[in-house]
Length: 178
Image (cartoon, rainbow, N blue to C red; front, top):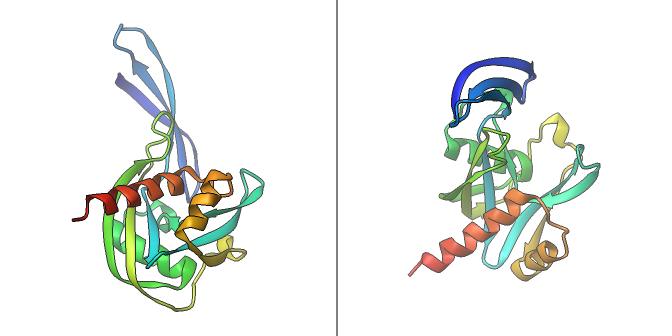
């Protein structure tokens, strides 16, 4: 596909929506709607066999959901992924990691969004106070044993696609270790 032009149809501090005029491989033209959001960092806090999750109300779903800490920089800023991961971990959980290792990349919804995420494994954790954004004031955090996290995924209690995919990246990362 070739882009022939683009116009922004909506924007706020977290995202923008654009409509592109495109030419397909067969020469026909059309439009393609794209949601542009800044890249995000997702952090898997791991302490032995325990994983740290956050739970918050997800407005579009109208329900509370457990997931790994994750987020973007304010005002659609472009921030170094490792720096963003450390900040999101600290803001949402209060945890600080001695070691942050990138273990993979996830595309949120590549058929409609340009957003990509980098997944980090956080170890060597120390406790601290969270410093949450206004939208995160209702957030709760808790440690879960790995077996419990797997059961929560199987039961649909953890249904955030990025968190489920990130857990798979963790398993593959661990499998690749000597």
